Image (cartoon, rainbow, N blue to C red; front, side, top):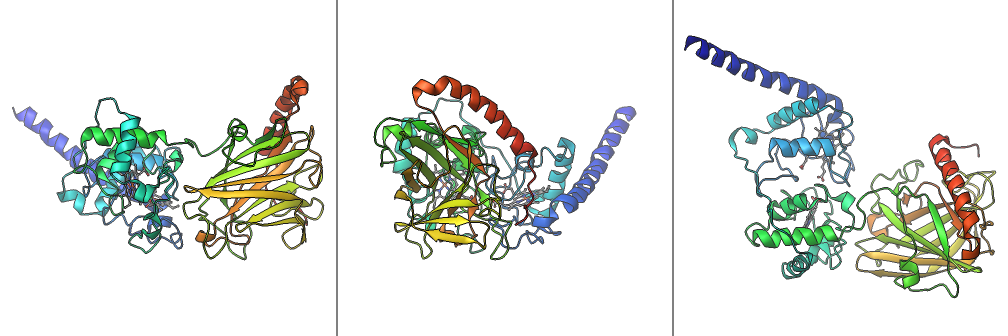
Length: 467
Ligand code: HEC
Ligand code: HEC
């Protein structure tokens, strides 16, 4: 009896002593890794927070987005632990699973909870996830009946009529999620997780809970429908080659023509232009990826560029897009408009039907010429579709049997993007697929060049060459 009581006391002592120790380790890790954004107090006012969108969270208030609990409740320990491990995709909040061990992440959770007194008093209970089958078709009906499209758009691209007027507490524009880009889901695009977001909402945002409005089955069907809209499950394309497929006859000018849709698409990630300052290093571009397809018919070549843009045309600053080619065969020019020895040729399109061609030897040395290419553009349901076309021998470097460096750049006027304030890709390569009769030799060549390109990507220095 006495021994049992003694054991109980020792165990209790270990538990109560372990918690502060964990909290202390957690605090130390927080000071090392997290305060840059979340601030020393955890109030979201770290030195890097200025101008960040979305803002780092004020962790004292206890408003968590990613929870398995009902609306208004705090998250469970597992929820927080998951977010710290996976980060919040599509936001500056990094994933820590490769940097911090499971133990360290657990200690951080203990510390994070100590920041908000709410954790001591408020209950937290996980919602149950249905085990039943879900129906995408029924989900689509519920999506319409529940008017999700008012914010998320008819095609789920986050371009609903309310979305541009949404505001968050800090006065930043707040946008409904674009369901076609699964990799930007803050809580992951798995069906279970989508179900939890629909059921419990995202605390402190316009995304409310549907637990009391829809049955379990309705929300489960909705989750299946939302998941079915995902066209971009991962953010990066391994494919750095834009291959122009060969097709007899006229190149189609409608983006939804079967010839375009049957052509292999490359999904190219974009990032803000953060090298050149002034005018401004750009950390928060709206366009995070662009899909590219290319076709040629022996004479003409066309590039179809498509990207999601909820705000579309009509802003004060026009939207624009740039295709930049190395102007002569050989190495890769400096990515910002080339350099003294390696000029680039730029096809520039601006909303309103304006096209221009530039030949540049660096940002300060751009000469404008009449466009040797044409663009047909349209914007529908939150997505731009642009077809650039030109004569294949007219104005482009020789492409037959050659891999020509190509770089893409997009400016979203509604996001204040103009000049060098833009989203930009790395250098890609583009080439012509030979007509069917010549294809066997090509696949061997493509394989060899593919390996070469990969090696170049891995080993090429990133620095700026002499101008
Ligand atoms: C580069 C900036 C940055 C760093 C570094 C950073 N965070 Fe964040 N964090 C953010 C941003 C931004 C958000 C809010 C995103 C949003 O609202 O969508 C956030 C949100 C969170 C949230 C809220 C999750 C939710 O469900 O709402 C937690 C918890 C969090 N961070 C923990 C951490 C921890 C722990 C560290 C250090 C290991 C850390 N963060 C480091 C930027 C950062
Ligand atoms: C009033 C506008 C509004 C309505 C109506 C709305 N949402 Fe949302 N939704 C949002 C906003 C804003 C966000 C993003 C919040 C954030 O990032 O913090 C969001 C986020 C989401 C997410 C989160 C995905 C993730 O993990 O990042 C899902 C899922 C979702 N909504 C589904 C739905 C469904 C299904 C409906 C209809 C039943 C719906 N929403 C109705 C505004 C809305």
